[in-house]
Length: 343
Image 1 (cartoon, helix red, strand yellow):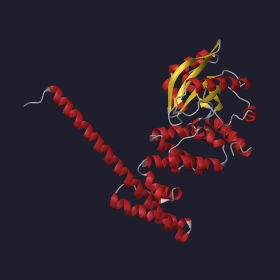
Image 2 (image 1 turned 120 degrees about the vertical axis):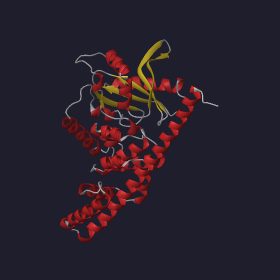
Image 3 (image 1 turned 60 degrees about the vertical axis):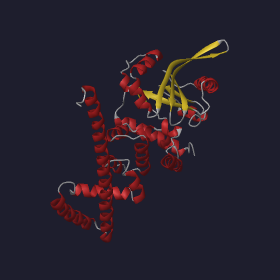
Image 4 (image 1 turned 90 degrees about the horizontal axis):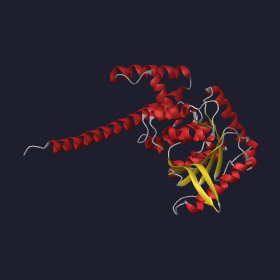
């Protein structure tokens, strides 16, 4: 009996899925084996380097190995590649960790990661790449956007960062410090020099997909201008989201000017209302994010808003030069760590 057009289409569709899935598994297996091979080569080269300790000896070894392997196996064993493999084994010396990473990250991911000199920063991007399943392009974008420096965890003492990352690695569990950042870069909104809060909110809703990307993975939009009736008074929350990994509602208030201490009281009211009327039994208590154009850091510290359920962050509608932003972020991190915030 001949296949009908619809049956033929269905059959081909099923077979295409099988082919695509098989190719994906093959590619993943090949990548995993390549990562393991490159680590083993790098580890062996490091052992050889240590035998003599002189840079000249290491250079001769790499030149010899590169020439021999390239003749026998072709491209992929250039001197630069061999040095990169040795660097890979240096920054990831534990074979068990590498064995786990090679099933989750590609060699192109790892090439980006081993170029990061700060061990904590490297670990931050490594763990998030695994947990949030970033593509290499996404990883590069996050690094270029200085995500680590903008994330709240960067301002914590080193031991707190280490403990938080260990929890993330062991339990795949994010904390608010790993979710919230400061500042938020909203240059994609294309705002004019002078705008109102309602125009800012409208622009965010127009570019909601980009805004969600800037907020980070795990956020889902719930509603805008959430009405809260308290007695005879009605209040309206600008934006309401839900964060799946944190299992919590996230209330966002937009402020055009500098943060005012009274903004904290307003957000506390909103969170208590959400906790009473909107929170589901399986959810964690709601969280609040006050997005403002500027803030007084000492005021934030006195109000103890570096911890707890309410966070305050600035937003930038125009992206400053990278060196200017980087300098500001580094100074902020150094200031926070010197005061032992979150320790």
